[in-house]
Length: 287
Image (cartoon, rainbow, N blue to C red):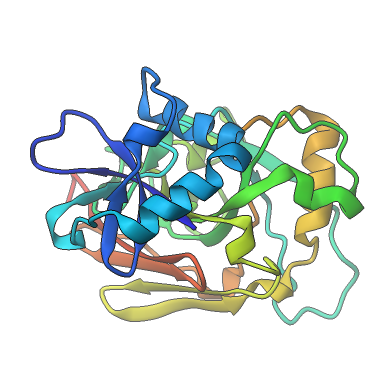
């Protein structure tokens, strides 16, 4: 099942839906009402075992809105936490695996399909780069989950672009006076979407093709089987450090061989096998 948040021209806020081959089926009448779209999606994650048969029936039987008549939004507009892996791909290197490490990315940086990545107004010689990544959507509360039990902590999967500010030479945001994660936390620097593919849609998250295009030019093109530290280990590592709650995200890192710059006026697309594809614009106020 592919869960989305969507809006029509008459909606004041996003509604939950199921993405089908016919379009988007509205499921808002079947789920718990909450104050924000984020809490609605967290409620669906928490209640999914009870809701599943109802949602499957709705997706099968109810009228679908064609995609041309709706706007998909970020499926998790404000996750409680975004943990992101540092590197985490072999990239054809003949070496020992590097120690697993993660950083926290600003949840307020989330945007969704059709939105615009806004580069900040700064004069230092930085390059703003894309990193196309698989992201794990957590079912919580999950704490001290062993690698062998990793599936118990996974609700589903989505795609994320980890937009990153780097000095010339590819070093992330200067170590002084600011630490590196801040260069990845500007507003709009965490596009996710187009949907949450529930765990049953993806038998093996370490066998997915990730692709990314910039103005039609293929940049990233890799398989998640190249991870140094695979999904079960990521789940164990993160939940050993902290409690991961429903709707939290773990971004699995990227293959850096496809890195490139983002510049004003460009259109970028990310696609992950079994999840889907989304497109965004890039804008630089300094042109």
